[in-house]
Amino acid sequence: WRRLFQGACTKAAPGTCRRTRAIAFTPVGPIQQAYDGRSHRLAMSDPEFAQRRQEMLGVITAQTVFLTGRLGKAALDRRVMAAMAEVPRHEFVPPELQPFAYADSPLPIGCGKTISQPFIVALMTDLLDPAETDVVLEVGTGLGYQSAVLARLVRQVYSIELIDELAAGARQRFARLGIQNIEVRISDGRAGWPEHAPFRKIIVTAAPESVPPELIRQLA
Image: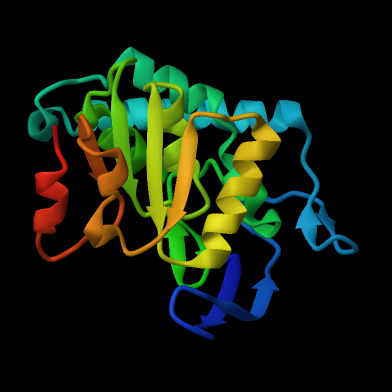
């Protein structure tokens, strides 16, 4: 499919974001759907989203097999795959992009940020080796998809987001979906969350040049 969405945000102040434009494009190719011009979104039903989610799992499985030599295994943890099957990814992207939420591709979520492609989310979660009793720190909430996946696998998620608009969007989604074991803080993630440290595990969804020392100190 071609480029579907173009969004530009300008920083109004540190930690804030102001959307300046958002342009939706109708898709082409195998995922073309009837475009609802009135609501500026593509109409899809819950069963259609569920089908796309199953297709997403198939792609993740195939990607894992393809990378067996590099990953050292041919399948991701079953608990992780079950969480990926349960979390409605389309709820964590802008409405214009919901029909494309299950494509194995990152998507823009505003403020110059993206939601990671499903395979990367599944792989990072698998590498974290989450246990039901874990308390996990996440740096980089975005709109909350990675947090929601983790919330199904661990006892508590503390998530830090720098941009107010994204943090507010994530909280709204957690409330709407009834997810109660995630707490979001608006802050610079490099400082961690010392009030809740130590953490059994920490996941950073951005790509810093080096690991912030404070995060290392907050590991259990």
